[in-house]
Length: 400
Image 1 (cartoon, rainbow, N blue to C red):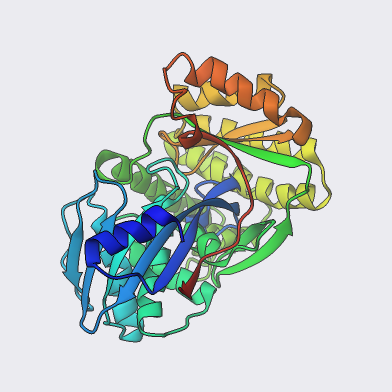
Image 2: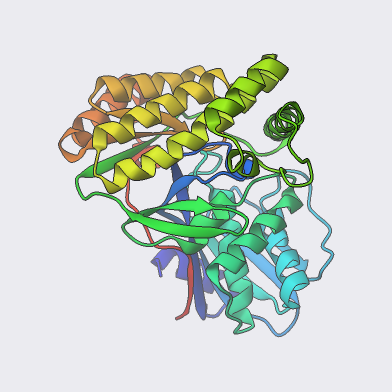
């Protein structure tokens, strides 16, 4: 356990913590905005993680603070109906986990906790889902209760809707169930992970745009509106193809009955404007995920990179979630030797991920530093914004 985490706990509560829960953030390598369409995605857990030092209580109270002074401590009582804090309050993620665990398993034993995170906040690297997963494991650990990682991920994906986000489950799945050294294809309904070893000589560089990708307010409305558009587009195409509505409820259901080209042709006849763009992104991005897994298994660096470039173009043009800063980072990385680069996460801020050979990593990092962070005066805290991702293991809880 990091000294500052344990030290903060002792200072706050007067005793040592007894347990440590941890959950990694993630970088999605390819497959953006399609998990909630029912299609597979391809993320990787990060070495950046949320850690919770905790000590079980004898009552149902949760008392939590962080090692970051700008976040005020929170406390609440666990139950199956927990009143949320104001929109955007970090404590709502703890409440989401607590309410979900209470409803599913009847767990209501609280804990004292101090939380530390090395996952950049609002960066599109799933710091929020990592916090929810780690909080759930702390609740389980306090009651000496064990839960299957995939079962936990499914429950927390549903529970996180407490904060108002309609996600698809990718973030929780990879945070809870990742295998060290591997990316994973994540499938839905039912949720499952298929580990795919990352070639030793591949490097994924993560670079933050310095624009926060918030999940509250107007940004949340924008994400949820796009999800609604993808659902409306699907309904119209299903009707156009005269498929049984009761049986075709997701894009996966659709693609099990017709090919991608046939679906796109039908969309061209019955959709226009934003609905056509959203539909086209989902169908083409789903195809890119399938090809990307094949490329990684076949160690085709260039093939994987080409697919990442196609993904970014689709996210920028058809899903309209890129911004100039993300486009600039993508361009710099490619010019410096990355074979592919794309925005990662929900977009409208956050990070890009760039793929390069091990021999090119230093050049990519240097170019991003010189051409993006240097002119913005962000060299001193560079480690917070720019790093090489390492495929990490999924969440865990242990006694100290």
